[in-house]
Length: 183
Image: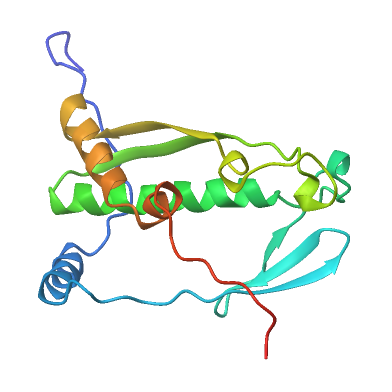
């Protein structure tokens, strides 16, 4: 290479999604804004706190508790699974918004933290707590994102995806919740 030749930077982009399919999906949503799908999971307790959750035809999602909470520490705790669902949903949304805006991403990582406590001991004789005082009290998400857009454009993509994230909105907003014995 001659002394006057400038070095070139090669950027590898993340595997893209189908933009045409995304646009068709968006059009269906505009034409039928009340449409909904249903997610289904079948969870089976193996023993202690270890559960297997069956989702579609995938391998089960294994959940456990750490040793200090009387689990076997063989898998992530329920709260960690919740954060992983949030991280996955936000990553999907960021990818979709970037695709919609025709921004190619070369890196996307989300680092999630949530402050959670269990002084009520799952309602088994611990502290008397109100529902609003249990569960995650704060969640923080730090997004590392790179692509063929300015930092400001990338931040706008992240913020837009956050507003429309189904999982983030499920966590932020009260939703009807029913539980009872199976028939």
